[in-house]
Amino acid sequence: MRDLKRLLRYIKPHWETFALATFAMFLVGLLEIAIGSLIVPIFDQALTKGGGQRTQTLFGLQHLIPESGLAAWKTISLLLLTFTLAKGIAEYFSTFLMARIGQSAVLKLRQDLYSHLLNQAASFFERHRTNYLVSRLVTSAAAIEVSVTDKPGSIRMSVSKIEGANSYMFQYAIAPVTDEAQWKIVTAATRSIIIDGLECGKQYTFRAGGIGPDPTIIFSDTFTRFIA
Image (cartoon, rainbow, N blue to C red):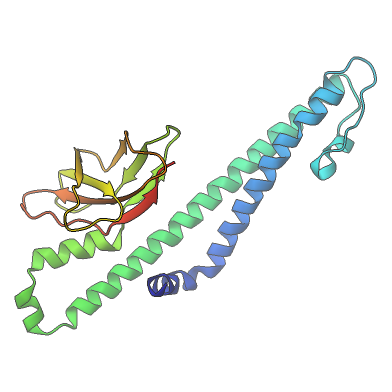
C-alpha cells in the first residue's frame, strides 16, 4: 500500500490528463453499449415487412429510426458508422493519454532515482558496481508489462528497451516464489513474446532482463498475475 501511494505521487501532477483519459474510457464504454443496442431496431424495424414496432432500447435509439423499410436501414447504418467512428476516436485519446501519463511518470521516477544515487556517499559506490546501478536504473523504472491474450493459458510479456541488450530473457514461475523456485526461461530477440502452456487458475510471477556484452543479467522487478 505504501508503494502504491508513492507511485500515485508521480501521477498527481497529471490529474487533469488522467481525468480526461478516464472520461474517454467512459465514452468508449457508452458507445460500445450504443452499438450493441442497434441490434434491437435491426430486427424489430429494419428487417420487418410493412409496419415495424419500436421496441424500447437503451438511450431510446428506437425513436431516431423510422419504423421500417429502407429509411430504417439508412438511419441504422448512419448511426452505426457514427458510433464506431466516435468510439475509435475516444479509444485513441484514452490510450494515448494514459501512455503519456505512464511515460511521464517513468521519466520523473528515473530522475528521482538518479538524483538519489548522486547524493550517496563514496562508500556506496565502492560496494555497488556502476554497471549494476545503471542497469537497475533502466530496468526497475520501467517494469515489465504482462497482458492477457485470447488463448486460455497464455500471456503476453513485454519489457522496455534496455540499453546494450541484443536479446532478452523472460522468466516465470508459479507464485509464491521462494529461493528454491525453478524459474522457467524463454529467450527472444524481441522485447515482446507470448508464453503458452500456463495452468489456468494459478498465479504466476514474471520477470525479464536484457542479454548483452556484460555477462551479468540485471532483471526487472517481478510482476504477479493470475492466469485465466
